[in-house]
Amino acid sequence: MSLVNIYRLTLCAILSIGMATAFAPLSTSTSRHSIAALNAYVPDGLSPQEYAKIKANDKKKIGKDLGRLGPKGFKSRSLEAWQMAFERGETSHTFAPIGYREKVKNGTIKKEEVPYMVRGGSWDNSDLKGAKRLRWLKKDKEYATGGYKKEQSSSIIGSGPGIDWAGKRSREENRSKIVPGFN
Image 1 (cartoon, rainbow, N blue to C red):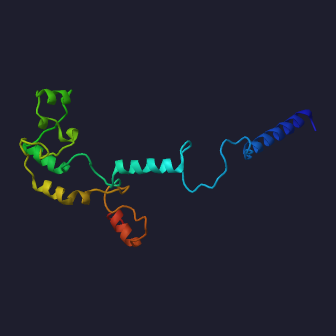
Image 2 (image 1 turned 90 degrees about the vertical axis):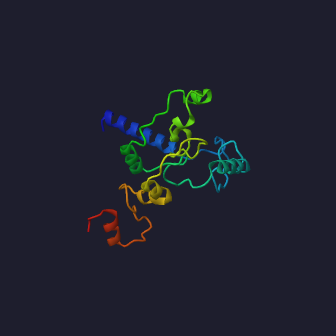
Image 3 (image 1 turned 90 degrees about the horizontal axis):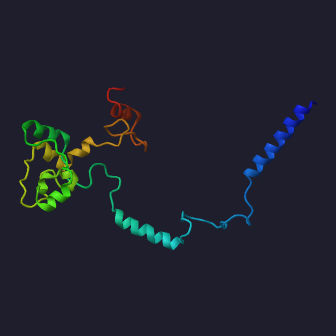
């Protein structure tokens, strides 16, 4: 055996031992955590009771219906209804004026001149007292009574019933519903 091969074997042995000890558990004297049975996640520095109290406060703040799709802070209208109103000249593109908060406080502009999505209101100005109400179209009424739910989908395809993750539909139903025309 040559000297080079001996060096290679020695190097491999040293690396193997080093890698094996890297994955060995630490001794209890060097570990900073004590070994205990855990049933839930608790951040370092907090007791389980303190963490439970923080989680309860967060739950109160957040509220319900976290999985809901669509706008939450304002009352919206469908894009189709907006387009119809735009073509009739009843609405326009709206942008929040620069410094609108100060301008509303000073009385330079009226609150209804601030777009409803920015002020967290309603598209028809029903959230403002004394403001001119905008006219509801047939499409607006359909949308407001839950018509938007037909259009909303969490499907990866973009519309429709989505993937049947629970396996409640038959294979034929999935083929016809998920990819229309695919039979």
